[in-house]
Image 1 (cartoon, rainbow, N blue to C red):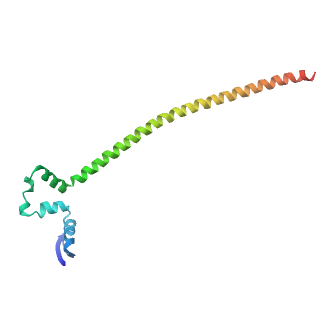
Image 2 (cartoon, rainbow, N blue to C red):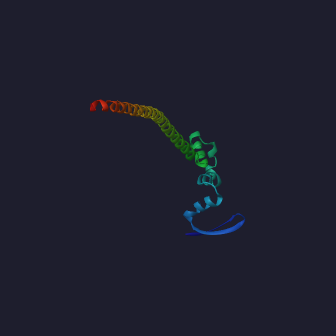
Image 3 (cartoon, rainbow, N blue to C red):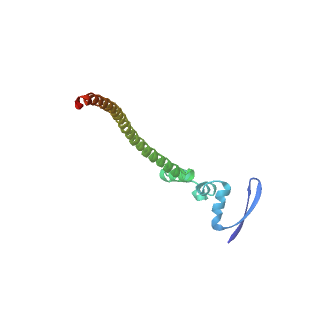
Length: 141
């Protein structure tokens, strides 16, 4: 079944032929509102028009649908979880950084010790060589 649907968009008349099942989708996109606003506010049946006076839980559910609060709450919860996860990773990386700094300092100390010991070894080799040079004339005799 096809319908001709005429409405004004930005001051111009537009005609649309569509199946009945797609009318809701077209209304939502044309009016720029969510399906919950369309069903609960704009096209609310007279018998259901007193929903703002309903009980707390039902009223909260309607408002959550209209204002997409559940999506917002889920997004906030996801952000909170991501922030907590990232905070934990930051703590782990800070601990790792602390230990890496300690290892770097220790490596620098060891490198300095090696340089010092190499200098001592070179000095000792020169002393031994000078002693050998002094002993060479005595070995010949």
